[in-house]
Image (cartoon, rainbow, N blue to C red; front, side):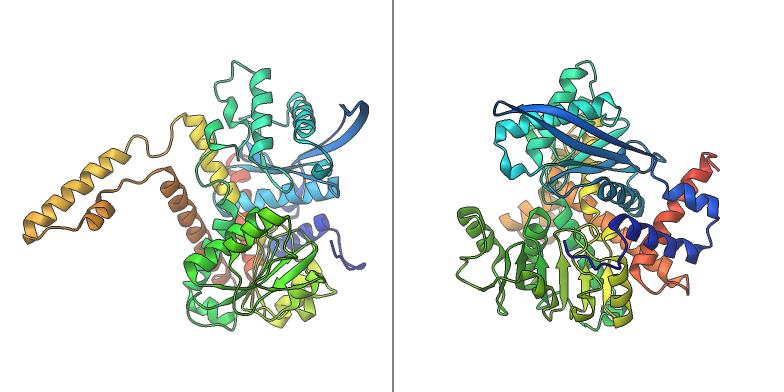
Length: 473
């Protein structure tokens, strides 16, 4: 991760962005301090016997806020993880949940490990042991603290965690809600894997519904034909790029990975590239684009939309002045440092910040948690009823007009929404309403001229109101 020497840490950067919003609000100093404080941080060290030798692993779980329960946030497995990063991400989760009206507090976890160095069975052993430590210390349960996937983790790890919790608390009928992001056949929900990338797409689409905002980013028209550079072809980057290119006509002109980048000004077929990576293990030999080794420099390529979807601190004070994108959408957590954010705003580059753009994952995690707590699949009770109503509507149309309706039209009218339809609809509605609320905050305060400050002001107002309502201060 690139970071200029004179820049604050990721955690300090988040706090500085929050301070900027609080100064605009004129928030009481005591209230501000209470909102910013991290509620609790757990560090665990535990031994696991791997290949005949004892290895000691270090992990963390930070709970930033319990103003809503449970606290929510992913667990990442990474060789660079540390406590400062975990605390910063936990704080970001608090503001993220508030901005999209998900009634959770903010939490985050990490394990200091390189997953590529261990087999599947070894990773299961390590994950179950880590889960045990979190449960014993009260940092994992359906009612107080609910992890989800993050960098280096996925459905597999969530299934192991849920199963470990189940064996410790076999009488807890809500055990499956102790984590989200599980496989569908183990209590997960349709659409969770794609959720963060889909949320990025919905955030950009909502931005382009407001012509004044598009004009402010020195663009015009719709998404169709806009050029885009994307950094990171992991779960978030892949889905965001796939949906934007296949459904909205966005042209992906460059894809940046950790070991280089691909460039094709005529556009890159994301699904084709994804299949190539699955088969060959990397982007280097992809035949339909030019490969360059210094991928980080491709962040500076001219484009309409830049989507950093990899790691934090990718755009810093060192390279911010060379960024040529008109709109930056933070699909990753903290890809723009505090110092770089200031430079980009002065250049007139519009930024859709991570606390909003990245919120699709926690939104659908909320849907999954609700599904687990209610013990019923979304759509189960009304789908056939909707189909019958649709069929009746078709019959009435045919009788009223004296003309038959085509089979395709009949199927379209009578089809009842399934779980995936409802998840996508709920996510789309959430991202639309959140952006409209952010815009309203910006327009109603003459001291706010950027979306990031508007996001934090909107979020902090909700959190402060929550504390006040229960008499915390």
